[in-house]
Amino acid sequence: MNSAPFQFSPDGGITGHSLGTIRADLSWLTKVIEFRLQQHFSGVDDDDFMTGLPPPDLSGNDSFYAYMIQKYNFSTTERVILLTALAVHVAPVCFDIFFLKNENLNRGYTEFGGIIGTAHSGFIPTGETLSFLLCGRNLEKRFQLMEYFSDYHPFYSQNILHLSDVKDGDPIFSGAVTISKEYLTLLTQGRPYYPHYTSSFPAKRITTPLTFADAVYDEHTAHALDDVRGWIKHGQSIMADTHLRMFLKQGYRVLFYGPPGTGKTMTAAMLGKESGLDVYQIDLSAVVSKYIGETEKNLASLFNMAENKQWILFFDEADALFGKRTQTQSSNDQYANQQVSYLLQRIEDFNGTVVLATNFKDNIDTAFLRRFQSIVFFPKPKTEQRLALWRKYFSAFEVDADLESIANEFELSGGSMINVLRYCSIVAQRRGTTVVTAEDIYKGITKEYQKEGITI
Image 1 (cartoon, rainbow, N blue to C red):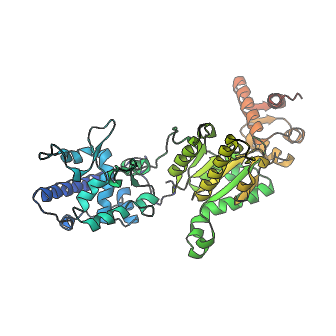
Image 2: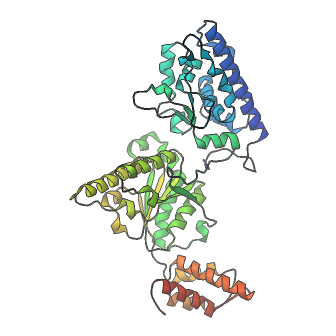
Image 3: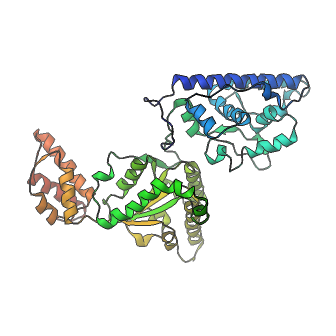
């Protein structure tokens, strides 16, 4: 949600005006519930009763809640649905009245719906609760209510809220009205939601203080990245064209390949920083499972979470999951091939940007390669690029060394140079000086070569 055209409060919290707006609307929801119950128990079945209970006026209101209502042009009915989902978290007492017992049956009223949570002892409204409030016994309106939970309504397409899954055979309206964590955070705290690493979302948000002005690429890499940056910047405008949308698939798929330490992860983070989009690095070790169906389940959960968020998903060491399919000689081979096919389909259907990174392009299945919009090679830096990196990295020090000779002599990646920088920084701090000597740099380089079993 970083790209949403809404200015959050400077401290990242909800403003008093936003809090007051939601409080007023929750008060209105309480009146709607009370009035509907009065009608029900007096034998009146007026499903148009809300015409006499207009919601609070939001004109001139600059809260995120008001912005959201106005952006999607939500009707009074949609506003009730949204508030019902929100109130479970911020004002659950609104629904205590639904615990009334039907004395004739010695049980709750079926028409009220509702469930009780695992840890929450209060009344959690369901689709049936909404049907009672908004439709009464009007079957046509009940059918219309289903449309609000269809996959093309903003509630679903923008991941605002949904009806929770129900067991096979249970009525669809027995699912709880569930607001997403993303919009719960936006509405109650006035800031974007950053999901935590969990088993159902095995990913972490990556950031960088660097920009593309700080990076050093060779000419071919820079040109290839321009295409990626261009799509991220202009993709929404391109897909808004009805003619282009007939031929172009949504989303963008990129492959970064090249030796370790050449800036693949850093570049993915900089793409997010430049565009204001969140970048999530997927933990493939938590996604891949030896149990049949578990890998697909994990991926489905991950992509469902990311859908419509304008995130950049970054799969590092992607050949572990996106590797070449093999000839089927056993059930294990067949299962592995099914995983790859499933991945291919989910990535093609994803409407955001997916970046896969690998050290070896040849390890990636050719079926994936054909579907990438961009393939970007990250080579080890050449002499002139190494010199530029040495100078950039050590600009905070007084360098008593011939960096040009060092750049000529040692073919290091940018990541290895940063390790040398860290070593020299420690040495300089120990000496209490800002001077880095040639001996310091050579010792740091020696340590890097020793990691690969090379002596110099």
